[in-house]
Structures are given as structure tokens and as C-alpha cells.
Image 1 (cartoon, rainbow, N blue to C red):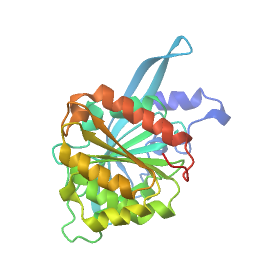
Image 2: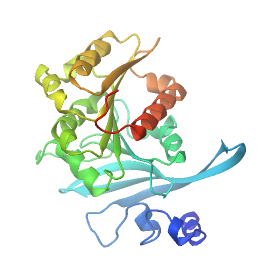
Image 3: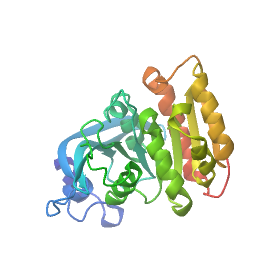
Length: 277
């Protein structure tokens, strides 16, 4: 908190970060007067050195956990951001064997935040610390939409990464809203196993206009078959395989995985929505 206040104080008004209206609380999206707004769980200040123009520069950013109430349901998430207007927002989902901490553990959140992205890792209802919705008030895809709106993740653009158990819900969300939401810039799908989708899902995939990347382990033939079936239906899509890897390649070789992720984000940031890969 002291680091953030010092950063705002020492910065010219015209160059100040995005969230300066209410200081630290605005920076992390907290509004203490809103009973349904995000509630901070813990926060960590990270300083990461990197080479810039032949010199060493320090990238300062925060990594924190929070929970937010949506339609009476508690949703838990992690976020990493440097507080400036982001290049883009990146939203991460996990598979059944991990919680949102996996993207922090393998360095993805810190890597992207140090490059100027706002990174949010959400646990869907009933997963991790997010409460199950026993009444099934709305579909999970609608929870995703409301969460994105609540945290204002559409602007200046959003790329979503989904994995394993989260795939069907995230794909439903993109099928419903990609063609009407030009700020949904990109979609990355890990482990798109055939049993997660129906033939009708793939037909409806033609409505997805976001740049799309399917990632598979090189030895996972089921994923590769399913991913190529999807790619034939989604106009702006392609498939990439990690050689000599199976399903959890992102955990086995996070350096290579994070590098591919960063390249895709750079590509999407430069690509007009209507252009194909």
C-alpha cells in the first residue's frame, strides 16, 4: 500500500496510473462502501528486474487475492497488475487438478504483469475457494460475463485462457458473446478433449470471432483431434502442440509455455479483430 501511494505521489498527473481516484483501494478494485464489491484477502508487492535499452529496469507490481459477491455467490480470484493502464487484460482459468494459484506458481501472472498486462485468475463456482451455486441461478457462462463486467476487464481488450474442466463454460461464453463484443480479443484453449464438447458446440464455434489458439501436448492425440475439429469451425484459429508432452505441459515446462503465451498476446494486440491468422 505504501509503495502504491508513493508511486502516485511521485508521478506527474498526466502520467498517473489508471486507478488513482481513491488511492490503493481503487487500484485493486476495492470499494468499501459497496457490500458486493471485491474484498481483499492478501497483497504482495513484487519488484522484478529486466533489461531495457541496454540498462536494467525494475518492474513494480502487486499480486493479490480477493473475493467478490455476484448474485449472492462468493467468487475467489487472484490478480497481478502494475497499476498503469494495461496493454490488455488477461483472464486465466484452471483445470480440475489446480486452483488459481497455479498461474502464480509457474510465473505466468508475474511475467505478464511485468510486461504491462492486468492478469486475473478466477476460480469458477464450486472450484477452489469460490462458493458453489446450489440453486444454479444462472449458467456458469453468465457468471463469467458478470465477473468481467464487475472488474471492468473488457477495456482496453481482453484475452481469456481456459484449461481442462473450465473449457466448456468458457467456450459457451465466447459462443454467446464473441460476435457482439469486439473487445474480446483472444481465446486460448488448453486440453480441448473431445468429451468436453458436442458436435453442436463445434458448429456454433463459427460465431467466435476472437483470435483463437488451441494448445495440446504432442503425445495427446485426443486433444489434437478435438482441437483441429474446432479450428476447422472457428475462422481465426490455429493449433500448437508441445512436443514430447501430454496434458499438463504448462506445469512441466512453464518457461516455454509462458513464452508462447506472451507471443500470442503480442500478436493479438497488433491484430485488427477482423483479420484472420
